[in-house]
Image 1 (tube, rainbow, N blue to C red):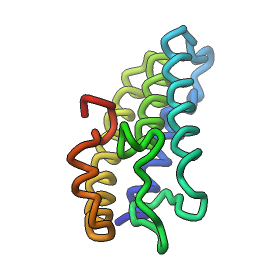
Image 2 (cartoon, rainbow, N blue to C red; image 1 turned 120 degrees about the horizontal axis):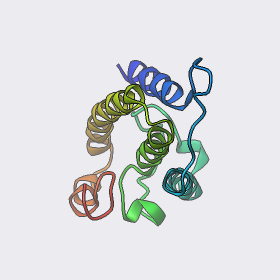
Image 3 (spheres, rainbow, N blue to C red; image 1 turned 180 degrees about the vertical axis):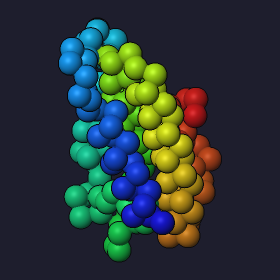
Length: 145
């Protein structure tokens, strides 16, 4: 199941980012789409900066020997990499202005929601302090969600 979720996530990211084969379908970059994309890159960079490389994985199961990271961007959101993916996807949807892209982003959000649920179940089993961390830290959007 985990590998299927990762495959679906990566496929949807590619489909959202790809311009398609329609001539003249270049993205219309605006200040908002550029800013959202940059915020996504910053969120990903901030997550990678505090996550030990040996414990990073695209799969929802924590790697053997992984430690619970609650510093840096993880103080504000439990899943900053998913936040990064959604911000970059949102930027692409705004740039392309396509109903198809928006539908793909909605599917991606659904896949990520399932993946988060699965990942959090593993984290609750692995780390005794994860339940407390989850109570005090939002999942994706600081102070909101």
